[in-house]
Length: 363
Image (cartoon, one colour):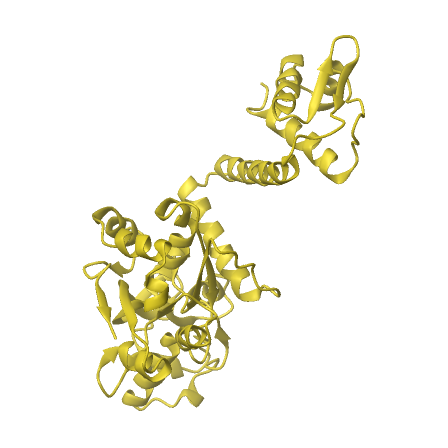
């Protein structure tokens, strides 16, 4: 039985040959019969592929002369070809994953987690055209989901993510390197989130605090919790290795304060200085068996099929200077966060409370 959508693979193969220069303008492609033999498929499958390439303006067929690569591709075809090639690769990956038993939702989640890892290991900064909204701050899986759907929220715009930690995000705002920052910084003295830090780092500026969600943070452990971890006191057990978040992250700020309150010296926790830039990386380290426990988001634990011991429920806000809040794309985002459909989408990620999602206040 012929493999479904084989013609797409033939199209992609020829596209890549043209892009790489293996097929030059004017070159004649193999006959339909030759391609059918090469791909072990029907003549109709090859004809379908050639028709698609012709529709895209990449090849031309003439009676008695065969099929040739066009001499001059249509205007803009290089950019369109790159995008079409990428979409085709993505479809091939999706088809392979579904064939191996994964659901489309699982594939989408895996890609988001992989993008999280890439964003904190990339060597070069992303371009920032006028249609790009720049985000800096604390890692959050709802934010990565929003970035993936940002063109639906505000057409024509993209959300560029840079996970620098909560303090790093506010500093980026102060330096004009970001349009909005994600933070969940708990202030012990006032027992409030974010506003005291905004006042210290952005003095004299009018800044909006737009609530994304309430999040559950706690200990992430392997499925089944084989070591029966129940709380912070267990982190000093001999033989148990811990993985942490980086200094400057809101997660680390809360954990340092909690250990101090309970009189637990961080020096007695094996691996306390072994830090990761995202909650996804913390969960991945546990899923891969490199460590036995970490501190992070329930959402990350769920994404990797791990167990979770909740220790705190916190508020995560988007800090937005007034100048940024007046941008069309940011206004659209703020309005979108107030809708029931958005609340449901964020809630379904797991580990989020959405009763205050979209709530707006000013500092």
